[in-house]
Image (tube, one colour):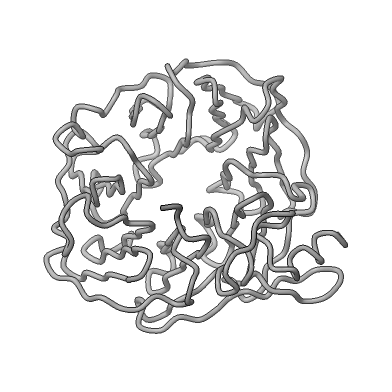
Length: 344
């Protein structure tokens, strides 16, 4: 813990010994759809209260049952969490400074969560007080994705960098291989509003969909072919107000599907396709007409599904957006994680 404190104070990326990041990175919150931003950086440790403003954010995961509970993975390694909507953060000691590839939160048991950490999968059932190892792979950095089944939360899925999809039907007690992708699994997500439907992104073969609880998979590559670099996918978001509607961020821009991913249609952005690098986006899950995205310098907001856009300044001076999130139980609040500027 002493090393962790000194490294954060020295202004390093992540919770380990890493390159410096701008001192205005970390987590920001807006209760006004980007009109104003509030810094949420208080990191509570045994040695006192420190700051996340020197920490590069990699990804943000929220508890489906609790809008105040979130997990934040850190560039360079480490995991922190909050149970008070970002007012304070704490480090997961079990992880230390190791890179976390994925986080899955049980949608029915709020204190149960799963982590992918290098070649291991870890599980907590007591709100991060203790973790135990539930899977160990002989290959380094093999555990790349983890997800909780949309119907039965005792069923856990684990994706590997080798393309294996493993399943446990007893909360991680034992595992079996149920599918083999041709390339590594980058992330795996169940649609929270259509529990039997899941999506997987692979490293070389793009996006796949399952409609039978992750047992069989169909490539969605054909629907993305009309869009140049459409398979360079950054993130996928689900919405509650339109059952079969998905939003996808890729190198082309922002796309919307009204049929679960079979076909896609670009949102009409201010900037032409491929001309602006969008670093983060979010859609209000209970009002999918509200769409937000950010480039390195500008925040964009549409209240009519992309027909018209309003631009605003981002918080911070040198850090750039890495992830944006809206919780369905708190749709009026927008969270933004900032990190290192992208390499040119």
